[in-house]
Length: 309
Image 1 (cartoon, rainbow, N blue to C red):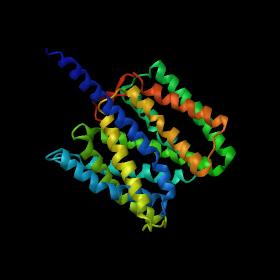
Image 2: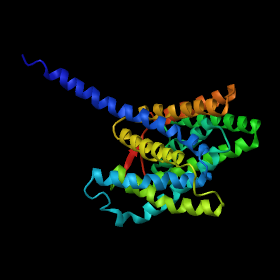
Image 3: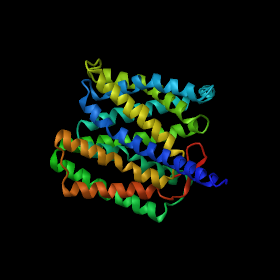
Image 4: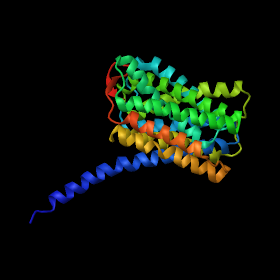
């Protein structure tokens, strides 16, 4: 007469597993539309990064207070890494947005995610441990795939190559951002951390846009609001939630949806058709992203605490 217990428990377990997975896929799809919004914006690329931050910051601060009574209680002891992480995040966004205008949307998304490969390399250096066999293969595949994509970009246009390199540099700077934020993340909840990094990156982006003499004030706010909500609030927020509930392998595989969606948008909106070398290079980099996240050793992060590679 009391057989309803186990099915309900199973249903709750399935729901608890499906929610992070849905958040992960939704976050990746939302992030994949970010480069398109940058191209559609009627302001400069770095200015678009500033508005992405400026419009998202109030929402993130409100969410931080909604999820915690004192979300920024420890910020005084962490102001230095927060400041420099904001500068690094600004550098990442600025260079990535500049690169988006100079290469395909698919390549911009792939190279923009190169921090997934670079952060484990930093971990290997800190922990003084050699990568596992799968991670070594991943790094080799990533190098070959990146070489194919870069060579193909130069063949199409030197401008595309410049865009790819800017996105690669952006991925490198984002690695610095992750390292700097590791100490902050160990002391604060994810949403307040994201809010602080967002606030700290606003001024550097604005000053850079002004120095480049970009158009700052938009006439069409809808695109920039979409960029802020899709990339900074929805995309980053869902990803932060999912990362706390799913394995690195699942996260790595799901990241592959970003270049697929971005490539489809680039094809439909701009006629950016990919050739066979592009597909091979993208597949190699995609496989590398999965392998480097799959079951690697735990390596020391910047704050000395062991974290998954």
